[in-house]
Length: 69
Image (cartoon, rainbow, N blue to C red):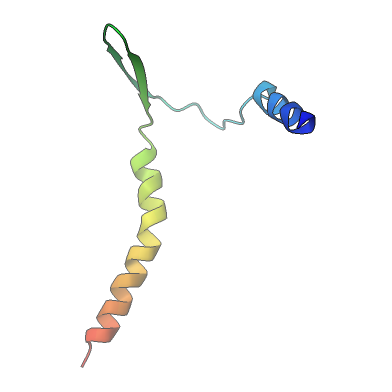
């Protein structure tokens, strides 16, 4: 358990490896009881497209092959 704590603390103290700082959009919501800050990364849609494109294109190729006469 102590080794896990030490590893966790060491990870928190390390500086993040950031190649280039990304601009984030920050939205804050304040109510009487709750304060929420949401940071949106503008590069997220690009990352999502990069991860989703290969499986979708493979599915489309398989469907096109199945529908050929």
